[in-house]
Length: 143
Image 1: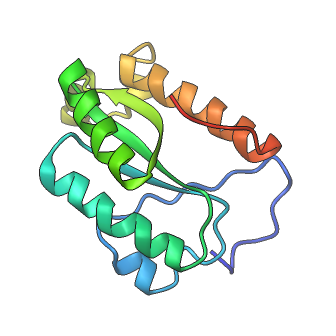
Image 2: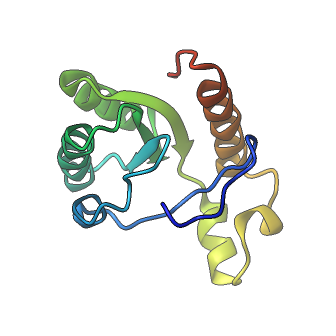
């Protein structure tokens, strides 16, 4: 990240990293403005988030947020919110489970090209708007 060219104020760079703490221990996140930890409503996914966030905070990252992914039901959402609330993690977005994601992948297409109106696309667009506003203004985030 430190070697990226100087960005204009409105530029955003997103890095998609694997679900582990390895990138944190290598210093990959040293110069980020915010870290989104994407979790799913499964025990192992939540536990991984539970290890990543404290480590990120130890490294000095102040803006570390949870995005819930593949949320199928109110029960899934409640499980994620409960887990995060007990640990003081802020949930900033919910992306619903969407069959179109798998269908697009089977066709070798991006989801937005395959089905631009998919519920997952809409959720990510809303999340992007919310985070852009948050990073620009410092306003509170959370859903």
